[in-house]
Every structure is written in C-alpha cells, then in structure tokens.
Image 1 (cartoon, rainbow, N blue to C red):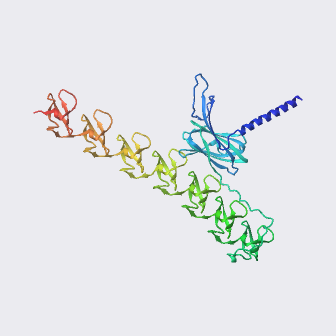
Image 2: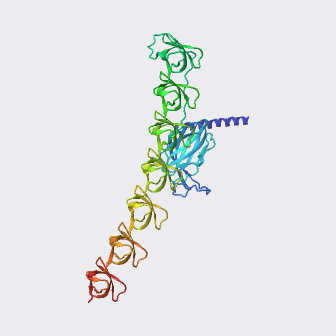
Length: 589
C-alpha cells in the first residue's frame, strides 16, 4: 500500500514538472525575435587543451581574491518551421553590425533536424566553414550542436545555415557568442525554391445546366465545327461532336463520360498562337513554375504541363511568360552571380524578367529575378579575367571572374579561398606610369634602393627594398630614378659636403638627392645635391697649390678650391686639413 502511494506521488510530481516545463516553452520569444544578453558566470580554469582554443575574454578582478570571471556576449535567433526539403534549405542570417564571434551554438526545440553545413561570411568576403556543423547527425528535440572556439580575428557580417527537418517542420534556436559585443541576428533570406502544386479544377458530376437564350453574333463561325478542341468554362477541355442551334454545341469533356450541351459563349476554341504564346513553347507560370504550353485557346486560356508535377493544368495566358534565349543582356547557358554571393548558371530566361538557374553548391533549379543576377563578362574597366591585380592598395590578388554589376571574384595572396569584392577596390598592372616602369632600379623615400616588380594604374608600385625581406607596396611618388649627373654633379665626383666635409658621390638621383661617402664617417649617406659643392682650379685669385696666409696669422697651403667660396687648406703647426673661406686667405709672395 505504501509503495502504491509513493508511485502515485511520483507520478503527480512528474506531471507538475512537465507543466512547469511547458510554461517555460510558452514564454520563449516569438519565432524570429532577436534576443541578446551579456552572461557573466564564474569560470574555473580548465585543464590545458590538446590544441589552442584561446578566446578573447573580458576579465574583471574583484577587491577580494576570487576566481576569474569570464564575460560572454550572447545573441540568439529563433527559426521556426524549417524546411523538410531533401538536402535542406539555406537560411541567410545577417548581423545588424559586424562582430568578432567566438562560438556558434544551436538547439532543436521542436521535432528533429539535420544540419548540412554552417558558414560564416567575413567583412573581407571570406567564407569560413564551421566544422562541427558539417553534415551532423539527426538531432532530436532539445539536442544541440556547439562549435569549438572559432579563433577568428575578422569581423563576421552574416551566417549561412543549411538545415533539413525530419518528421515535421523543426524549430531551432541559434546562438552566436561575440568576443566584445552582443551579436544582433536577423533572418534575412531563405533560399528554398519549392513550387506548390496548382490546384486542380473541381470535377463536376455533370456540366452546369444551360439555359436557352439568344447568343451573341459569332465572330469566328468557322472555328465552331465538329472535331474542334475546346476549353469549357475556363477549366474543362473537350471536343465538339455536334453543332446545335441556338448558339449551343454538343461536346465531350476529357475525363467525363457522355456528351454535354453547352453555350458557345462559355467555350474557347483551340488556336495555334495568341498574345505571342503558342503550343509547344517553354514557359513560366505564375512567376514560379516552369513548364511547356500544350494548347492555346481563343478565350486566352492555355493547357500546360508543369515541371515536376503530373497531369495537365488550365491557366490564364496573362499568367504565362514565354521562354527566350536572351533577355535584358542575359542569355541562356551563361555564367552569372546571384545576390552578389552565389555562382549561377542560367538555364532558362523568360519575358517577365525571371530566370531559371542552378546555384553552385545547391541542388535543383531555382527561379530568380534578373534584377538579382549579374552576368559573367570577360573584362570591365580594362580589368580582365586572369589579371594579376592589387587589392585595397596593399595585397596582390588574382582576378578569377568579372561581373556586369561591378563585382569581381578574386583569390588574395595570403588568404585561402575566393573572395567577392567590388571592382573599385582593385587596380590593374601597367608597364609604366609617370616615368616609373616595372624592372626599374630606383630610390625609395630618397634613402633606400628599390627595384620595381609591378606598376599599377592607381599610382602604386610593388617593389623590393634593399635590406628588407619580401615585397612592399609604395606610392609611385615616393620613388625616384638614379641618374649619372644632375645639377652639374656626377657619380664619382670629389666634392665638399655642407661646406665643411669632403665627400665622394656614389650615385645621383632624379629627385635632387645623391648617395655619398663622407670623409671621417662610416657607410653611405643620402644628401641633397644643394649641400654639395664641386672643386674648381681657382677662385678669387686663389688656386690649388698656392702658399697662403690664413686669417693674417697662420701660414699654409691650398689643397682644393671650391665653387662655393671655400677652400681646403693645411696650416703650419696644425695637423689635418681645414675648410676655410677664400676671403680669409691671402696669397703669399
């Protein structure tokens, strides 16, 4: 008896627990509603992991010694009624403001779900796959997935999640953990081109009764004849078996037994073409369903076959757009880009501005607007597929694809994968620009020797610099050519630097600089040509070799005379040479 009472008590407790849990579920945010909060929990230092999983953490230290505190910035998004389509639908989730993410988590709240993939799109256009979300097992209700530390430094702008419901449409909660701020998530787009089966016309047990009334003049008397195919009441196809008086015909209706007497005002007769639409044309119905026109009728109805659906369907001609080979600068079997993100191949084009495409990485056909497509072209703004270019004035890149909307697909040196960027962010190589050519040996920043590897049309150059590893991107204006002579000064000249020191010119540059060796100093020095003075034979009556009196006191000998009014002399009783003004010298007799 006691055991029975205990079992009843436990059952009651279980029911109470489940009711409380149901209340919690009811209080969850509405589907698609953003949730964001900052969760601070005491963190116990974990054992050292096998691989580096360092996270950027905000740590606060209380006054009294306590365990470190780890701050997480958690943004959440609920996605309801996820697709049951085989292969899954793609859910594109935008961050209202780009952020650095530490982790990605997901929990299934209703039904079962399989995650096929998850990718992060960064500000640089790089697509990064989340390994733990790749081809997951089927998750049951309340089961979850979590990534390891993402180890990202780039800011993420969007998340692409491919998921497939099992058993029934699943609801999930996606959580993004930010490094420094709460990620604000918004479901932007669901790529799931699934067509619903058009409703079949209701099958009457018999045609509606026809009242005898005076018919309007028949504008096409020749079309009403025995054997003519008709559409009745906009929904039923049949054949005239007998033309009756009083504006009526007797006809059989496909799928229904017997004959039916009907008013000719309620029928349309088959015709080859109408409103530019003919039997046998490929077409698009209701902006969504591709198919083929089988028959056209004079009352602007058509009987069509829809791809992927059985049977024939009666539709209005006004809801049909015919297939064409080219439309609005697009043509079938050409490459394009969809929504600035997905490589596409155009399979069919329609006169209503729609296209049927395949998307790289996604199965099946998709109906999209031409306004969302950009065609693949060979060149734009003198930039062509295959060109080596400069991205963002800093990094070498290779041009893979060019699109008509000003976007290009590139690989970027030092980064994996391909990237979609604006053509305005790249510059093309050119042989020469502003007198600087690839292969030139020049002077960079007036002090360092450099060799030009490539020149770009945005006035940048890729160079190697003597004494530095690798290549460097520098403005063309910072480069100057080496020349033999300038301002009367040539390489090899023995000159006077700054009126006081002897110098030998090693190289002369077109930017008014020279590379010199200065007596008494190690190495070479870049100096202005205006600071150098050339030696002359005589000036102001004083010549090299003359015996002189300096400053009316010291006797000596002139070694060199310079054009700037100075001379280099030796003085009796003093070692070395001295640079003095010619005005301070008097020639000895």
